[in-house]
Length: 62
Image (cartoon, rainbow, N blue to C red; front, side):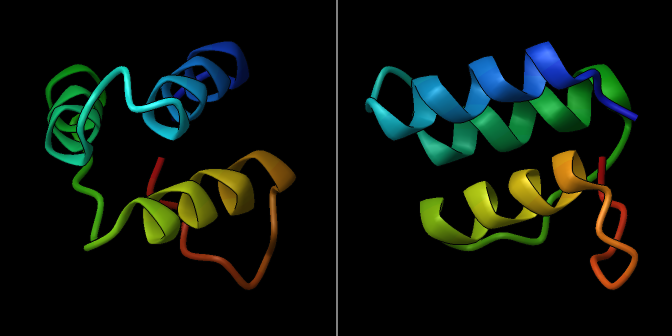
Protein backbone atom coordinates (compact mmCIF):
# COMPACT_ATOMS: atom_id res chain seq x y z
CA UNK A 1 0.00 0.00 0.00
CA UNK A 2 1.33 3.41 -0.95
CA UNK A 3 1.17 6.14 1.70
CA UNK A 4 -1.18 9.10 1.35
CA UNK A 5 1.49 11.81 1.06
CA UNK A 6 3.40 10.01 -1.70
CA UNK A 7 0.20 9.30 -3.60
CA UNK A 8 -0.94 12.93 -3.39
CA UNK A 9 2.46 14.17 -4.58
CA UNK A 10 2.44 11.73 -7.48
CA UNK A 11 -1.05 12.77 -8.58
CA UNK A 12 -0.19 16.47 -8.29
CA UNK A 13 2.95 16.08 -10.39
CA UNK A 14 1.00 14.09 -12.97
CA UNK A 15 -1.80 16.65 -13.05
CA UNK A 16 0.68 19.51 -13.55
CA UNK A 17 2.50 17.58 -16.30
CA UNK A 18 5.74 17.41 -14.30
CA UNK A 19 5.80 13.65 -14.93
CA UNK A 20 4.22 11.43 -17.56
CA UNK A 21 1.66 8.71 -16.98
CA UNK A 22 4.31 6.13 -17.86
CA UNK A 23 6.64 7.55 -15.20
CA UNK A 24 3.87 7.54 -12.58
CA UNK A 25 2.90 3.95 -13.38
CA UNK A 26 6.57 2.87 -13.34
CA UNK A 27 7.13 4.54 -9.97
CA UNK A 28 4.18 2.74 -8.40
CA UNK A 29 5.25 -0.59 -9.90
CA UNK A 30 8.91 -0.19 -8.95
CA UNK A 31 8.47 1.07 -5.40
CA UNK A 32 5.29 -0.68 -4.36
CA UNK A 33 5.17 -3.80 -6.50
CA UNK A 34 1.72 -3.14 -7.92
CA UNK A 35 0.68 -2.44 -11.46
CA UNK A 36 -1.82 0.27 -12.34
CA UNK A 37 -4.35 -0.64 -15.03
CA UNK A 38 -4.99 2.99 -15.96
CA UNK A 39 -4.63 3.92 -19.62
CA UNK A 40 -5.12 7.66 -19.17
CA UNK A 41 -4.14 10.30 -16.63
CA UNK A 42 -7.79 10.63 -15.66
CA UNK A 43 -8.08 6.89 -14.92
CA UNK A 44 -4.83 6.92 -12.93
CA UNK A 45 -5.97 9.90 -10.85
CA UNK A 46 -9.35 8.19 -10.29
CA UNK A 47 -7.58 5.02 -9.09
CA UNK A 48 -5.48 7.09 -6.72
CA UNK A 49 -8.50 9.01 -5.44
CA UNK A 50 -10.40 5.79 -4.79
CA UNK A 51 -7.40 4.34 -3.03
CA UNK A 52 -7.10 7.44 -0.83
CA UNK A 53 -10.81 7.41 -0.04
CA UNK A 54 -10.59 3.75 0.92
CA UNK A 55 -13.56 2.95 -1.25
CA UNK A 56 -14.78 -0.60 -0.64
CA UNK A 57 -15.99 -0.88 -4.24
CA UNK A 58 -12.70 0.24 -5.76
CA UNK A 59 -9.99 -2.26 -6.51
CA UNK A 60 -7.10 -1.79 -4.09
CA UNK A 61 -4.30 -1.25 -6.58
CA UNK A 62 -2.06 0.68 -4.24
